[in-house]
Length: 283
Image (tube, rainbow, N blue to C red; front, side, top):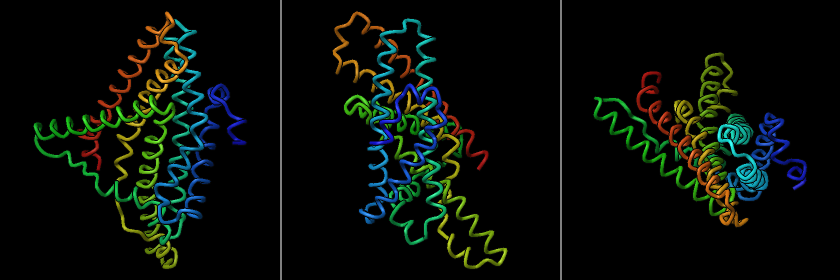
């Protein structure tokens, strides 16, 4: 790709904010292509196209981070270096998410059913009822945490098997979160336009509310957890491909991966706690 030739992880680490615009551009092109070529399955095809565009950068990031494991011996310094990758990947994620938000808001209603069909179905199937006594809340907490750990395992396996495969799970989550935010904004635009007498605008933006803005509150720490897990899976994948398991520093790589996994689980614990005990108080 032309843009991919202009980008590399080192440049991204120096100017992480640029990845926001790259993510926005990649996903926008993916939506346009999926609508044009595969309209009936646009809700999934746009995710695949976005993933395809991101894979070169993400895979090169995994290779760079694996090299850092061999070059940097101090764990705190190594974690700081890994955090640089997490930061610019988060900017990429936010760019992709905002793109989905923008397209959800401004696409005609008839196209929304094609472009965001699977995402809307997913949101409607999510039930986050965390009310009840302490036992019920703990049971819900355990169920949510177990489900999130399963997703984390998939992110690690995808990264391990495909090198940059975790980007699929992250892009899918970006599309779901973007749909939730976009629906919230679009529904409110429709309501206010109707109150002000702009019937045409109200009709254009009118969609059925799927009301899952509260997903965002716990969604961000979940995404961070999946990034750490994906990074861990990607590093071990690159290490095996390069046969670094024969290197005396391979134990250091394993130790670093273990730290990344511990951090990812900590973020999942935080996300589950927010979802069960804090979100119900706010929404």
